[in-house]
Length: 186
Image (cartoon, rainbow, N blue to C red; front, side, top):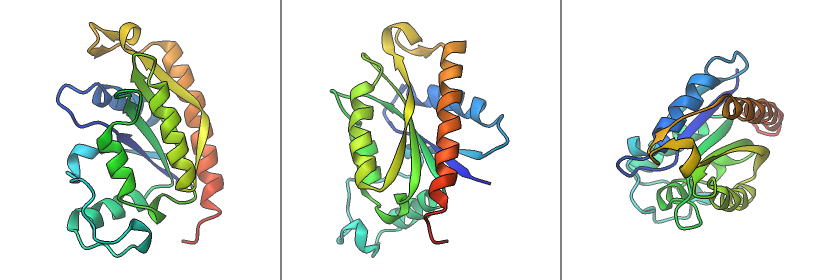
């Protein structure tokens, strides 16, 4: 069965991404066509990139890198739950992505984002990064708006419309994850 990571892409206190990711996981885990796992960047405590070699060499010296590598390599696809910070990707998410290279290859990704404009600019940057990492990103995405989708700008209030968009995105993400798996050597 396909394994999909739901990556919580922020680590700051009072983050919204955790609420959103748990909602995504609750809906996704009802499916029988893939297994889903929450992957919280807080649990990996990755410092700013501290490996002496570039990730494409796969000569990791740090234990935290080896743990992160094994976790990411174990998945067939990724669903990134991210905020938009200053018109872009949260630094902690970009740092975590940049730790690895081959582990991401020939897999698929989807996005759930939030921010003033639904996190759209963060996702546009992520799409560029995904291309460099040989990740096929699916077009449907769920964009959440701080002013309308979060009560008092803090508490996520999902709707049926959100669930429909998420289902469409998951359908594509699972299909593409399966297709991309045929490209990888096990």
